[in-house]
Image 1: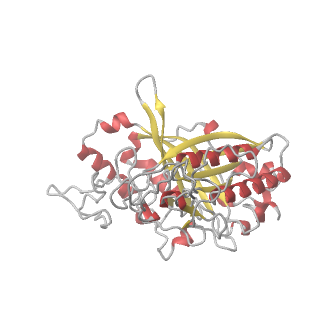
Image 2: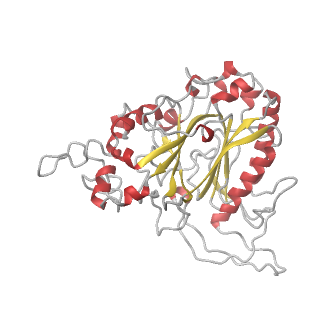
Image 3: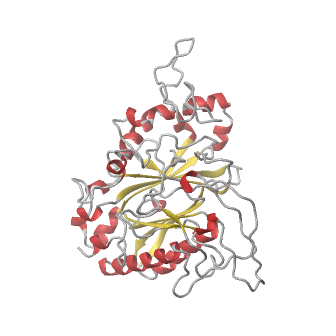
Length: 429
């Protein structure tokens, strides 16, 4: 239940690049301070000032607004893209009678829209102007296919074995209405209006071909909110994401992406793609906040203030699993979350965690509906997510403070070629 590490780099073929300036949107009356961007985004520049009544050309946007993510590339955006401040996850079901033809047209529309919006351009027609004045703001739009998509489109023979439904877990309390779906879209941006603009555009593009099954909203720390780049914190106040794999790791691609030619569990059309596991994890914050800091640290296995292991050092220090205290007890308890979830405690199982926090209001009983929209990426979920979750399910000290309320698994194909669209290799096979 950890999110992406602060130093995760943008993929060279689907990464973040500074846009040269404003496209068709204008900057109006922005002023502020300098900042340092979260994760691999880099240092922020000073904010420019432009009057809406000024006859001169508007000043360049801040770095936050000008950052653009490439739509075309080997991999889809939104996987190795640095974490964004705002996010929307939405699943669609194809409409009754809609099949492969309608799905193909829909993916063409969605891809064209995503390409324009990620470049900071408005819709070709019917733009809502929600994001007027803003730059791309690191917008990324990612598309995936659910298990049911293949039967709805007559493509059962192309369904990956890796997309088999996830097993039941003891700790699950899943709402089927907020789980799975034929199609899945992940939207992320560093500006809330830019993210909503993309969500609305994707919904409108669906037209009569598909309807929303469920939709969830999330957030992370905004770039520049801390004095230096840091691993983010979750709503429990814990530094979250220290052990995430890095793009610089020699085996990163092998663990996260399907080989170009496919694999035993993934057809060739999934080459350069990945599998997303999506879980809505409710945090029982009232129960958690009643614990002392020492008790919370024992549950996680790390210092709350710094993210360092209880065995000493700083956040990046290797945890000494065998270290004992003066009474002969393990310093990091056997059921500590950080111990149980380590790849070396799960046969090397690895996944790239890239979630958003959520808060959907406070109930009449005063209890917040808040937690984590967990999103993790791997080349094979049966070797990535499943073994780790099974182990956590059996004895994670954190389990009494969280509840898994929704779940989904989606095949996310490789990136679209220039002039092409996402899923083309599947839909035109």
